Amino acid sequence: MAMTQTGRPTQTMGGPRPAVSAAKPRRKWFTWRKSTPYLLILPAVLLELLIHVIPMIVGIWMSFIELTQFFITNWGEAPFSGLGNYEIALDFSGPLGWQLLRSFGLTLAFTLLTVGISFGFGMSAALALQRFGRGRGLIRTLFLIPYALPAYAGIITWKFVLQRDNGLLNELLMNLHLTGDRPFWLIGSNAFVSVVVVSIWQQWPFAFLMIMAGMQVIPDDVYEASAIDGANTWQQVRHITLGMMRPINAVLVLLLFLWTFREFNTPFVLFGPTPPESANLLTAHIYNSSFITWNFGLGSAMSVLLMLFLILVAGLWALWNRRVNRDA
Amino acid sequence: MIPGATVNSSMHFSFIFSEQNGGSAFDTSGKPSFTSQGMIDGVRQYVDLLSKYKVVNPSAAQYSETAQAAAEFARGDAAMYMAQTSAINVMSKNGMQPDQYGIVPIPAPAGKQPIGSFVAGSNISIFKNTKHLDEALQFVKFMTSAEEQQILNKAYTSLPAVTGVPAAFTDDKEKLDAFTTILADQSKPLPLISGIQAFQANVGGAVVGLIGKAATGATISDGDIRSALEQAQQKMATTK
Image 1 (spheres, rainbow over the protein chains, first blue to last red):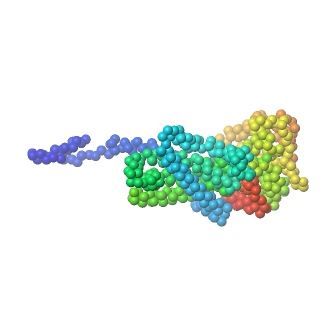
Image 2: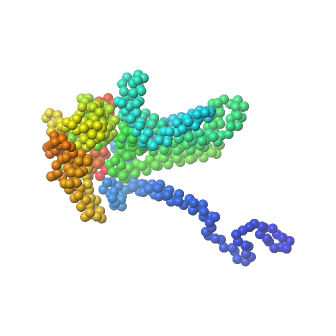
């Protein structure tokens, strides 16, 4: 506001309301400018509540009641059991609890292997494809096919490939005289290898896609500058590529971990509802010991425990990431 | 040929063979008695087909659906196949017509009870809190009427659930008679308890695990069978 020589203040900024000398101007409670952002996200919030949040809360509620086949038609009548379902799930002296613990360990090993190798493949492929001139688009499309394929179609095909008597894998091994007799891939201890391989086959194109996208952001002159300074390729990869992609890689690894830990389709389609001991992943185990016997209360309790673990992992990641961001 | 990794088939054959051995899955008060000697002998008999007598291809331990086992038989890769009447449908879809195979009751070893099957099937129920009781009852009457039973059982190649309706799932009279006789003389009913689904999942799952172990070459001792059935029985306790 500028003071003119006559002493009367003039408004230099345009405003919606003229300056009133005596009364304080009334603030409008609802303006389109303030409300528009909220209105725009309202449909998304409603759908998110409906599809994600409310079913999750219902699921958590289910874990505190004995929801069996007798109460399916009227959930409200199911008896409240407090932490009863959790006690059964965590009773490590009973068969259910002990198998849950074992499944948890197996799933952790499965997830670490799958995420590690998928990330490695994705990074290698992205680095290799950077130097590619022609044919890059074709190769990229080929690499993305496993990820684009409908999950069940791909896994059922793998199930045929891994059959002992007439599966493609054993045919190959026999023809190349690599082993004496045909091994089992869908039962026994090899089942773990099978489920890891099929998971990696499905997941690594996603890692490849994200890493490739992340690499585009790094400008070329950084590489040139480092080359002038005498950095070799490995040093470039380590310090420039990995260094500058740290935030993207952190998010990618977290996503892959959460998705792989919850993986259900792969063991269920490969092995049926009763997976072999070596591949009894957590989600398949939860299905097998609760939902298949219509004991939804117990299943929900185990699922809530799974969720708590994943929240813990995500929380630890967030803490570590803040430190990373501060340092970077 | 057996569908080795199929949970419900594993339960069925465990039940049949345990009845042959005089055992019973549930005692008179309805409590599970999976560790009774008869049950253990029955499961032993089933698993031995693969592990001791080696008359079953170990690959059967991979078949998590009965359709896979039926396809093996239809292709001619197995000489015998233990199945229900519904297999007639599956095999004709795989190209094997009823005149290409014969049907006999599942035999019992010498000195054991001649039980070859059990009586169970798809059920129809009316919910306690239904608002349309009359309509529901009418529907049940319709589904169990002689006319509708004939239509249904022809389509699903199954045996009628009501008396007075002749079996008609195939045109071959010998096969019809074979199954009717089995149903009348050589079947035991599956126990009518509320935990029957849990029984199937737990015992079936335990036996699938044993078959899987046997297929990969491990020897299955009586102790293995007993502990597997014990675990199944403990799991039953968690589902009321």
